[in-house]
Image (cartoon, rainbow over all chains, first blue to last red; front, side, top):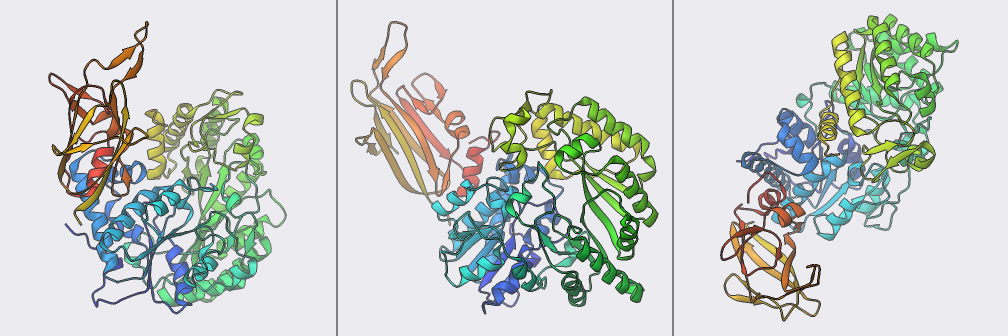
Amino acid sequence: MDYYFKCLENLDSKTVNFILLTVPWTDSLIPLMAPAALKPIVESTNLTCLATDLNAEIFAKFKKYPKLITFFYDEKIEDQETLDLLNDLYSSIAKSILTWNPTYIGLSLFSYASQVSAKWIAYFIKKLDPTVKIVIGGPGCLDTFVSESSTFMKLMLKEKLIDFHIRGDAEHSLVEFINANYSFPGINDTSWREMSKEELSRLPYPDYSDYNFDIYSSKTLPLIGTRGCVRKCKFCDYIENWKKFQWRTADDIFAEMLEQHKQYNIRVFKFQDSLVNGNMNEFLRLMELLAEYNIQNPNKSFKWGGYYILRNVTSRTEYEWEMVAKSGASTLMIGIENFNEDIRYDIGKKFTNEAIDFHLAQALKYNINLSLLNIVGYVTETQEHIDFIKTWLDKHLEYRSLVQLQWGAGLGIFPNTYLSNHQEQLGVILKDDSKAFDWSSTNIETNPKIRAKWVNELVEYSKQLGYPVIEHLDNHYILEKILSEQI
Amino acid sequence: MNKYKITITLEFSECNGYMDVLLNYVTKVIPNQDNRAIINLDIELPAQISLIFSNKHNDTIVDQLNNIIKDKSVQIKSIKLDSFELNDIFLQQKIQLKTEDQIITTSYIGFNGEVILDFNQNNAFKQVIACNSPLMEV
């Protein structure tokens, strides 16, 4: 059986030079932006390009099919029916791609859960047409998010399933790749060069013209305002990839929002960077621009969401919330990390519990939804901390209509993070760097099973109290593996 | 699309000579100087590959504590289908040696008998995944 992919449909038998695709599996309700961001870059070299979000179409088709998700993570199946389905799926993808007769195919891997599909899509393509050049990129190519090496990329190259891989920011390296400058940092090399603030500001706007917005449950346009972060949280691996905080100006971002709205008639934006309010001057300027726009355009006002950091309360905090509300903020994702102040401070997020209460009250006042991201089982966390979190939840019931809680899959210790680099000092015993969730401690009683149990306890307790809880399929999968002692 | 390359690596242990290995009832497999033999085949799937092992008699030397010191044997070290290695689940749990009087699940061939690699899927993707998945029978 052949599957049909609207995003790859080629009714007029057109030809393109370059096809850029996201590959499954990423659990995302909104578009993944890498192909759209790179399409104008490719086209700037006078090549034609089809750039689309294949992952979204497959996610929409198969999100209720857990056996496929198991395969995307573990590359194992249990029955012939699933095997046949996967075979038809990959075969159809390869055939659909090749109807465009591309010279280059770029596969974008958002996370390691994209590796299995990337491998087999590449295999099916090369089996049909060994001459097509396949290049892969994205953080999913690495063993871990910040790994210096990639077993996957090496294997793909060795077996000639791909011709090139690109590491890090591809907005500059893809141009060099097309111009055959293969010695440029990041091309078939894990060391790469971050883009400068100037380069970031000069980037063309992403081109979503090949995306099918009907398949997303939320008609939202992603955008990037910053790279890097202003914080140095001990668990964070993102800051190891983008070491320097870089930002675009508010005027530049606002101009992109206006232009994208004009192109796609979408008024909801989602910032995909690690934080929107790293540079408070630019952030407030953007809030003011958006607020002014929304006042002048009440029937087509903009809404936005993104990752937002909390700070301790100052004389400006109330004004900031007022502007956030006027700007059209709908949902802010906030890395609370832990409701225990001592743990939060130890992580490097130095805002008090009183500050959280103040921010929550402001969000309630302005009816802004908050998605609170938590890490359960930090290196100092004990049962008493878990009990405190339950008490915190008991005492904040008035915010149930406002907040969504995410409890994750327990603390993972990833290479090159502070936690990984200070294991001995912290009493952490991590048996294998590639198994981030499999750690214990000499200081406190903790192990993967205890932490998974705590996560499930908090999920259930929050639900019992009536808090909305977001449970991602990938976290659920990791927890199941931990509890069945496969991690 | 249904033509595939298969590579089987065998490692021989010598004791009063080597075991004889016959591939697909026709081709004798001879170890090289490193006691290895690499079999390269172009196949169409589905396919059955037969390996017959013989010339093992009482060719095992043990010490006083009955530990094996030397054994005439063949180890199936690896099997690769196109670009993909079959994993330890396949090598250790799904290869069966049929001797005169029993069937043993093993990739260590220490008895005379026949191993049939029964690749019953119709392409490499399905075959590799079926072989490498613990709950799929091959």
